[in-house]
Image (cartoon, rainbow over all chains, first blue to last red; front, top):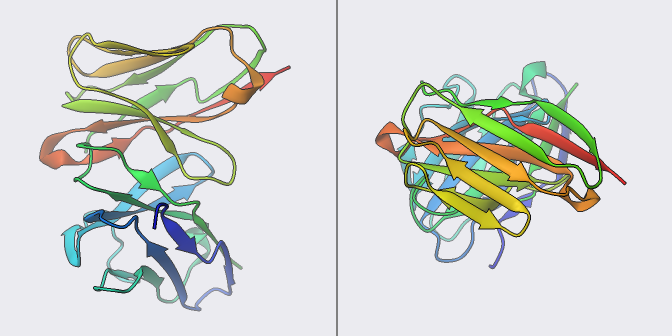
Length: 115
Length: 110
């Protein structure tokens, strides 16, 4: 598609429940990035993919967070056993090139609220 | 970790005023991008600067990359309510890692 599509827009989970977010990158873009935005300002890098391969996962909290980008499927970000501090807006971005080389195109974000 | 510090964090001004937002680091970046984010949306790229000392203009917005490629500024002339939003700088450092600054939330009152 012409835009990065993220679903759902809003997700509410009780503490300890699982949350799964989806992202369809722009067609033809090889790179997908996940960011976490807390307090409406700070962007924290989580993970990036080059096609279906993990490119950089230095920002991922490894214990409960996982992500995949499988061929012919939306990319996904899954949080097992959510905690209150996971409440944030999660943004997906795609790019033709890697980080910092070209423009990142962002989706509208998925707001996760953990109660 | 390469940190990008933006200042001010918040700015509320009247329509017609000028303003400057700063993005500073102790690290050198190969390029620096500025994004604007409006409520309920993802950030949108405004500009990329790659050369030390480079100045780019986008209508009323002027972007400058420091000579040493450690800092950048965004100057808005005659701000308008439509300029309201969150401005984010993002620098590319070693390993092509993109680091975002903490953001400057701008409100322009009519």
